[in-house]
Length: 343
Figure 1 (cartoon, one colour):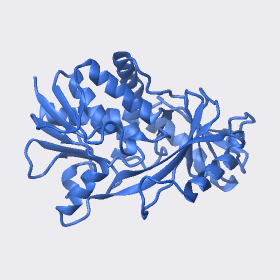
Figure 2 (cartoon, rainbow, N blue to C red; figure 1 turned 135 degrees about the vertical axis):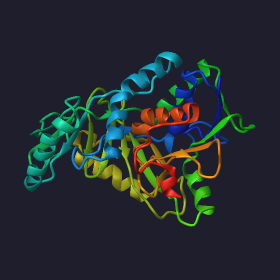
Figure 3 (tube, rainbow, N blue to C red; figure 1 turned 90 degrees about the vertical axis):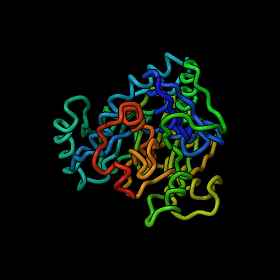
Figure 4 (tube, one colour; figure 1 turned 180 degrees about the vertical axis):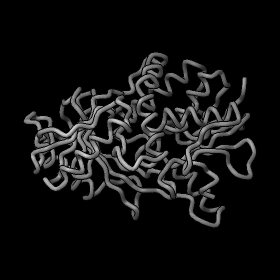
């Protein structure tokens, strides 16, 4: 049995620990702040694909991870007995105006090949359903690849599944075996301090949770916002993307504006009460793709970081790649993801 130390108990760290544990490794997870204390403890949880065009390794990697997500979360839930909130109910997007309709149709055509008939991206007349976005063009996009989960619940489900295998989350402790650094924004800042160029930075996001029961309905992406109907009868709405901020943990008028935009986009939310507000800083690698691979100059150490906005959707595939690296010594890291390229 190999020893693996995972530093960081966000979605990347917990997912990597889970896959390594499933492969028989002895795992310890270290995070002084505890599970999901950073950006992984948010409220939204959109597992949504990039548009099906201009295909590249990042989009292909994300596509494979989204397809793998159902089996990944099913096993986590069955092992630990806690729900992640995962469900694949697709997504609705309004077509902004009639001039955008030809582009949406071209993407629908391209999706048949790029998504290998495993999911669809359709353009259709806007729905009259109460749970539908306002569409000025009268048209909307419906895809069947998008899924959702509740971030806090998903991390708690991973913690429970790991506990069933004897893995707990410690605040500190000595490192054993290979060390995987999934330390989010703090990790990026530490790398910046020791390298000649910036490896990545933190982007603040603010989100809200509304009391409205739309469980089982598709998620909505409208006016740049993710509107996510969770299975507990709440709706996550977000988020902002703030490069400059003074307080990482407080919400302000920018979130108020997000809530009003969500109400305008989906009239069913007009009177929904705001029951929670959240702010946090998400790790963004310079390339905008996750940073995966061996830490240059530190044998036995690996980095998994930078899952800006797409961390939960990428997590199943990221975990497999990092387990391959740490346990087998090799992995298929897509071009643009390799840590060495960021140094």
